[in-house]
Length: 222
Image 1 (tube, rainbow, N blue to C red):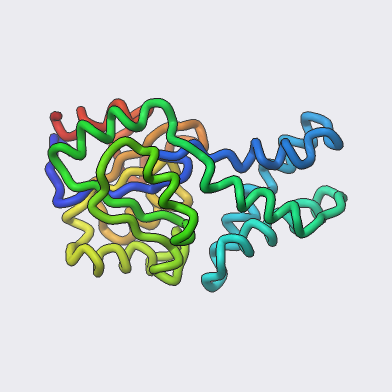
Image 2: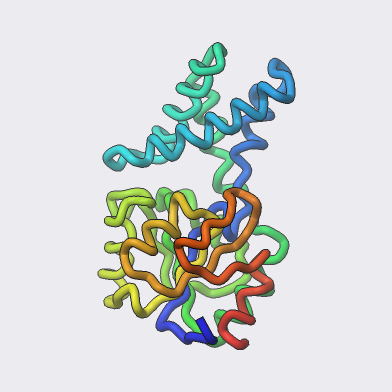
């Protein structure tokens, strides 16, 4: 990347910037009735079903969570209650950033406009963004785009709103499956993978790896 200065640095939000705590929410619901190996299996299933749910036509994120949780319960032979989905969904606006995020973002924001593209509802994300410690040029949601990542439509909506192309941004994410694979296919050459341990490295997709957001200013020579 050699200190490429883009028009915008674009970010995934949940998991990359915000400490994504779906696993913790699932533990609070079902930890008392599952052994640790079964709990880990449930968490893996819940993650996989959330991805599967967003691959359909857009629907409210409350439905994504509800359906993924219900399917995970069915797969693991457990009873599901609709209020469980509501419980998890209502947790999302309460989550705060990873500890490394505010200082790193603040440094970059002094030099380059920051943008979020998130698989969120408009009503969910403001309280999360308010805790990130830096000003954002724009925050775009799946609700606005009418599509969740990894659908290309979500990224294309962002490009249209910013009046720019894939050559004008550096996209930052901790996920290949939701962000970096699509970014690669759409021609975003400059990508940063934040290795939060969610997924294994995949060098095919061409990126700069950092351990956390404290390493992001160095990507731009800041």
